[in-house]
Image (cartoon, rainbow, N blue to C red; front, side, top):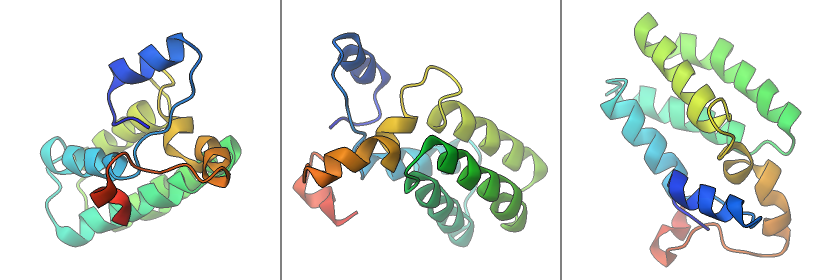
Length: 134
């Protein structure tokens, strides 16, 4: 269980150790980026984005991840009142940071593709008891 820290993921990957992204820190990192980097401030816009990300995260296969991303990209993003620039930046961010466009560190660690077996084994989804609410 790790936070969204690339150095931690690379270290674990280098020794062949699977890892899961903390279930609290994934939406926390997403929210921070949406607000700070894309300038998205409306609470309903942010909630729609986080709900779309959770919809993608509950995918149980890589094909489902891509199909759900298609739905979010073509159906959700255009309808939540973002500017064209905000949509373009958000699409690039999600594809690069969460759908493995850059280095392949996060898709299986963040979605149910990689979490399902660990969940069946009743492992935790966060490394902090307070964060288990999420």
